[in-house]
Structures are given as C-alpha cells and as structure tokens.
Length: 424
Ligand code: ADP
Image (tube, rainbow, N blue to C red; front, side, top):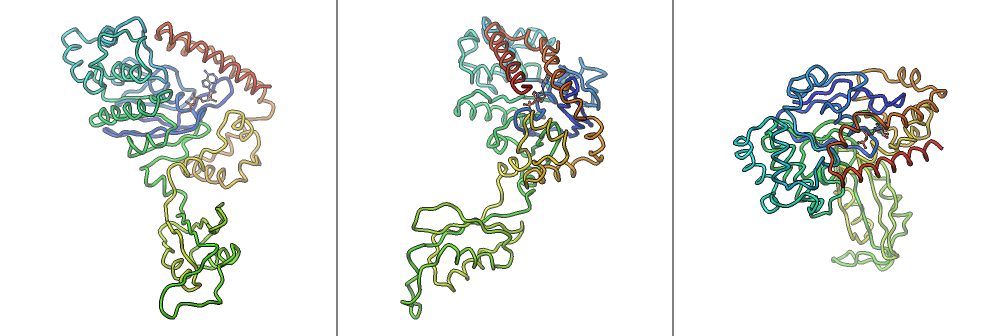
C-alpha cells in the first residue's frame, strides 16, 4: 500500500534522506521511528505529495506519487505534525469543508460523519469553535479531517507530540481503532506508543533506514540478553542443616564480579550502583541462552545471599538508542565528512553502521566520499538555510488557522535561529 524505493532528498546539498526504501502492506499499522531530524517528516511529505524527492520512487495504493499526485491524495489521509485547522470554524463546518474539498456531496458527508465522529470521539464538540478546543481534541479533529473521505491509507506525522499523557493515550486508542481496517504509517519518537499501536516498526537515523521489521525482531537485534544479579553485602546464607559455616564471610564486590565473570555463557559483567547493603551486577549473554541456573548454583555453592536475579531481553528503547545515538544535524555533517568520526568508534555507532549496511544492498562508501567533501560543508549549510523558504512549506502553512499560522511562524523563526546557531 505504501512503497518507498531508494528515496533521497537534498535540501541544497544537505542530504536529508539517503536511499530510503520500505514497504507497508495492506492492513498494517507501522511505526516510523527516529530521533528529531532523522528524516521522518521529509519522507512523509514526499509520500503525501507535498514535496518532491531528489531521487528514487514512491507509490501509494499502487499509484506513483510523482506521476499521479491527485490520485494519490484521493487514496490517503494525512495528518501533518500540526493539523491544518481553521480556529473560527466549528468542528462540524470544518469537517464538512474538508469533505467538500475531497469531493464528497452532502449526503455522503453526513453518512461518513457517523463513523468519523464515533472513531475519533468528536460527538461532544461538533458545534464548538476549533479554537476553543484542547490540543487533544484538535488532534482528534485533525484525524477526522484525514479520515473523512474514507481513505485506505493514513499517514500520521507525530500525532501525539504536544499532548499530555492522557490525551496521548486517547489518540493512540483512536489510531488503533482506525488501524483495524486501514493501512497506517505513524511517525513518532515515543516508543511506548509504537509498542501499544504497532506490530512493526521502521527506524530511520541520519536519513537512512537502520531497522525494519516486527518489534520482536528489532528488540532481538542487539543479539544479547541481560541479567541483573544482586547479592547481600553484609550477610551470608545461614539456613539448612549442615550448611552453617561460621567462618564464611560476606563477599566483596570483586569476589562476586570475578565469580560471575567465570561462568560459561557470560560475556560481560558490569557493577551497578547500590547502597552499602548489596552488590549488584549487570551481566550480558548471547540471545537464546539462559545462565540463571548457573548463577543460582554458583551463589548456593559460595553460600552467598541472593537478593535479586532477573533476565530480560533488550527493550525497544535500548535498540533504538543504540541505532540512532548521535543523530543530530551537526553530527550528521561531521559523520559524513569524516569516516573516522569518533562516533564510529562507539559500540552504538558500530551497531548503527552494521544495521544500515545490512539494510542497504548498495555499497555506501562511494556516495559519502564523493558527495560530502569538506569543501562543500559551508555551502551545504547555506543552501539548507535557504531551502527553509521552500514554497511547499508555505503551501502547508496556508491551510492553518490564524492561531496556528502564527504558531508556525514562530516555529519557523525559531528553527531558523537554531540553524543560524549551528552554522556558527
Ligand atoms: P524528522 O521529521 O525526523 O524530525 P525532518 O524530515 O523534518 O526530520 O528533517 C530531516 C533533516 O532535514 C533535518 O536536519 C532538517 O533540519 C532538515 N530539513 C527539513 N526540512 C528542511 C527544509 N525545508 N530546508 C532545509 N533543511 C530541512
């Protein structure tokens, strides 16, 4: 239903997207994850025909976004980061306006509204002016606008940013409901939302796809399991016939660490901070193994007192951090300029590099050295700043209500300022 093939986007000479490829199949709700600046909105704007790609191809519902953008727009509902709302309109009038824009006649609109109102929880606010609504309700109206023409594909760009935790949970509940019979691509950097609403995720970092697959596969990507083992620092085990040994002393941290390190299947042992009543360690072992029985045997043998032992696979958050650490615009410039960048020395960067190599069947070194010359760096920043005024952006903002428009202006100014700082 959504297909991106080697999409690249240059803002001036700044490469915001670099050969991004993925597919979203019918009926899937896919989380599109990545830190700020990773290229999520850029990808979504290309897929929704707001901006064009510099290279590559994309299809929505089998239709090419470059060849037939009108047909693509008919097939999709899009909720940009800031919903394009008109504050002076009532919710009902605004949704009717959105429906008219989509070519629905009055009776089609009325019958469609039954579902939209229910799915987005809008019954109580239909007669209210949009400007009087809370952020959460505004997002729901935005969702309503994206759904009013009953599109088979929905593209939602950070629909829950700016919402309080209760509003977030509500909007995610509505998205799950909507996703029951539609294809949804949902961008966010909130991992718990992805875990709540999506079975699959695509992670982007520095304009590239670094992971794509079911959440369990992504979690397993680190290839490791983690254990936490805590033993008493002041007491030893005293129970059981024939077990008492008055000469036995509580262990030092070094003794525990040494003993754990000696267990087969334990790759690393790291001391965790504790108060002065316990020694606590984090162990890592290969995925698919379980050394808890060995740990228990060891502790019994030594006569130590076990306070805690747990085993956990890495969380989505661990993997996300490992794959995307250091993904900031300035950092990206540096990484592309210098292959020996110190980022690459860290395990996280190594994981990210390994991941992106796995995803991309093209050799990448070539592009990086060819296109990201040191001489180009100044030009790059200048061009990127100029591109801020892109007419596409204006187009999107024109649709906003007055309040929102002024918010947007502020935001644009702020981001210009940011860029100015980064340039310095
Ligand atoms: P995300 O949605 O993941 O936060 P974006 O797609 O908005 O990321 O941005 C990706 C990168 O492209 C960022 O470094 C951003 O500053 C840059 N960028 C986005 N839009 C423009 C633009 N119109 N002009 C110049 N640079 C831009």
